[in-house]
Length: 260
Image 1 (cartoon, rainbow, N blue to C red):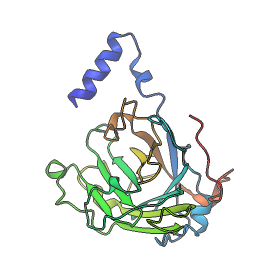
Image 2 (cartoon, rainbow, N blue to C red):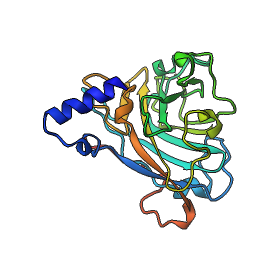
Image 3 (tube, helix red, strand yellow):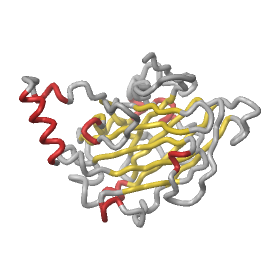
């Protein structure tokens, strides 16, 4: 909390209004799933097909190599927060299989969540490699690896050949269900209600060939750093069923490319 306060004071001393500090954070409305979601890595439910993607991922630390786009979208119901990533990747690699292994060394996607917008420094991180291995941390016990999110479910599908650099792959898909019970004691109310806001960020990292370091909300750090909760984007929960909303350009078959 001290770091956040000091940053805010610095902006005020420089004559920058407090509201301007975070007014460039991306926002996204999480629509409610209109039916059951089966976590199998296929994303073939109507809810996923209609859910809008988040803004294209940014590459703030890009220096060389090919920028490989990532499509990410979210849904929710009374029990779970659902997150899906479709990651374009010509060389998919992952070897770590033990729970809480450092999966960011592999091709991986990550979700960082602060369920209380008044305390963004209290956040959870969930990380998944292309084998579906999970690393999860909570604010409990100094972010100890002893904590595991109970009943979290992840499924991966790969369009290509894992750990084979002799050919080119197309993409890998990650589908995740994070139970809202994981956030007990840290969220203002569970499950969230229509209009509630949380803070979160979405990331992609790693890979043995052409490593990727991309983000939904720019962390504004000189080097790749994902543990920057003050730069988490803002998500709003909506009780509107996803299929009842007119969504344009939401097809999972088209992945938006980032220009920066």
